[in-house]
Length: 109
Image (tube, rainbow, N blue to C red; front, side, top):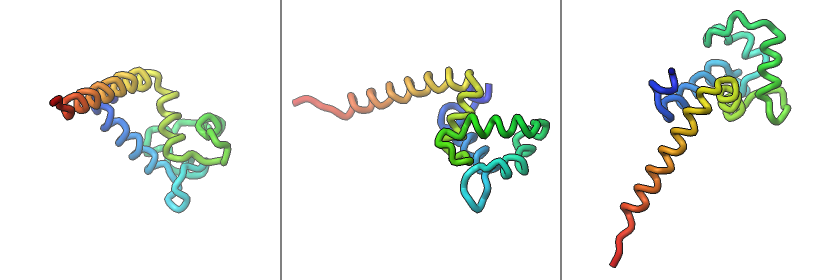
């Protein structure tokens, strides 16, 4: 529902905002500690420690113990299948827009 209201760019912006709320400001990544401290800001205050650890482990693709902005966004899409469906729609829409722009910018002699 949020994805439908915000559109592709709006959703990405909101994900980036969520990342910034959860991240350790000094390190520029989400750590388990920063997730614990800031989880309530995103309505995650009821998550248990093992759920937070599991979330970090699932999102930490490079296994460095922290989530980069990209890892966080990938995790959010994986945890929300409806976001993935919407993202395919936006990708197709963006590609069609690019094709239309390229076709309009070409001229024949």
